[in-house]
Image (cartoon, rainbow, N blue to C red):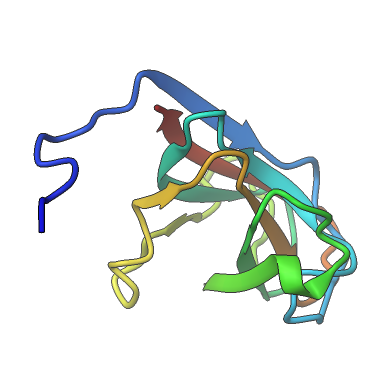
Length: 144
């Protein structure tokens, strides 16, 4: 059997994707309901290095869920899979201290990222608890 891709493959072009302001809870664990697109792989696929989450002010605690979508309609559960989760602690807005940065991969899930996505695959996210000020979610990677 011949091995494929024996030489390292690097991304060709950096790509950053981000959500709008997320405040609405979605307790579905199948990627349906209120979902937020954060990244779309290009025609040759993509590699996502990390996900960053920034609070926009005072929020109660919630959980961030990341779903992989196969490039088809995210309202169809069979097109999505729950891939990673991250607890997002409660935050209090301050003009003198930074709000906590949340990032995936985490120390408890070191293998979640980087991830290589096939062409046109997408990453969506949801939160488990409705929050007031909201969060923004950013995916950092590159296209092949």
